[in-house]
Image 1 (cartoon, rainbow, N blue to C red):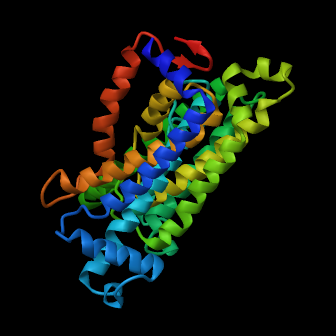
Image 2: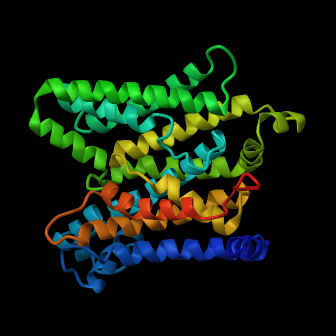
Length: 358
């Protein structure tokens, strides 16, 4: 009953745009406040002096260098910007994947993307594959693995007929198991303890490698992905109705489903490249937003992007301060938060998805 009232309340256009504005302001506030939090005790005034000098050229030129400048500008702020970008990518891809396979339990990694990324990372760490790519060769191999597995899923699902949501899901499960088996095989026979620790830590996710160079690639991809899928809200809504209903309305979902899968894989691949595998963001955020705002993707896409960005910013802050003297991998924290929330969502008596209550 409460969820239905929430949907009716938020379905009004003025309220919907007001919520978007408030979430955008909350995102800006989160970035500005979270940059002051860290293991190093830096006064608020000095933090903002550095930020405003670097962004707008306002203030003392001495703030353009030194220890405080390096901590704020090269460590804290890039991490927060990367957290926002990855939160956007994972949340949006979660929404899209759930529409593609018509399953509210789907997430960005459901079609084997995480297993492909894991295999790429394992090959690079344990066997040195892709070392010619440079210092970021592990992330590059993981990104390639994720993208190639996505292409493999599309190709496998199209064998013997057109790809459907069920065939995509089954193809993803099959290739995911295959990649997992190969990764385990490599780890078992390599007998490299340090490499095994590196693979495990990488699979837990971390924003510690954030840099402005990586952000210059990931942030535009995240924003362009949001804008693209926001323009596709009508087709995404049709996917929830099924292929038969969509055809009667004059839309063939087959090419769109494959296009959306490849675009989502590109977004997730770059997220994996920068931060490893971060679970539950693309699963829980769409559920929570859908409960409040309904299933219309015109509202769902921008709201999930903003909520996902805010959530991952504060998750990163907690990872840095929750344990004194060390950093908790962000994938562990998101799972600790996301799993109980997901269980609560599952045991609810009613939940709307695709216009139905289940």
